Image (cartoon, rainbow over all chains, first blue to last red; front, side, top):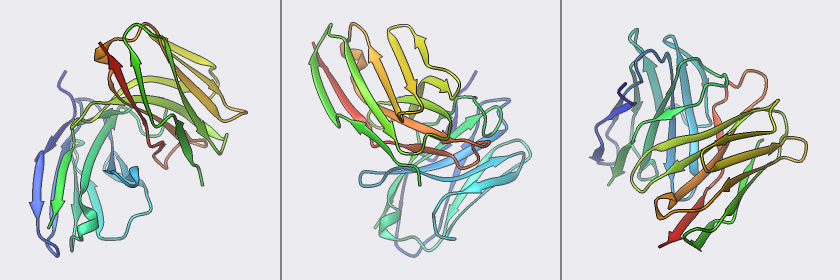
Length: 114
Length: 114
């Protein structure tokens, strides 16, 4: 079974631009969540989707948004990029949201904002 | 607000030793606790998940314990090997259905010397 796939692996953007990251969950998994990882703050929860509905959102500004499609694939978008948005963005999937199912993570998208 | 602390931040031990990684959390109302490992430039790999009603979980050379009342978990690694070198992360999911995502500690960077 293929794991969680995130594309692209690396991105370099300029301040003020916007970016879209993509995540394909493990086949059969309907829950997708996103996390931001930085050296200073560590891993922080962005949002979680289940059956195309956002279940919850972490403490991030409205510039961070996401969506989930009917095939469970998910995208996250960051508008008006700031230097502080440089981070590793990780996507995770599980079969059911918010339960005792373990999360399976992708290898992440490394975003650099210059 | 839930806070997760991992001690030590870094650990270097010779191959073959048994070792213990520590994780503490401030709010005992958790749904579950997960241990992950992260290799450089990669995503997270789920190692063990302990439900709030459980006291421990075992997988191969790994054993994780949970003491919810004291807000502590330990990850025991037996007969360490160089391949165990990685960053180990502890994360808790809030009780009540867990829609808030996981709250992570900053991790323990483990080096096993051959």
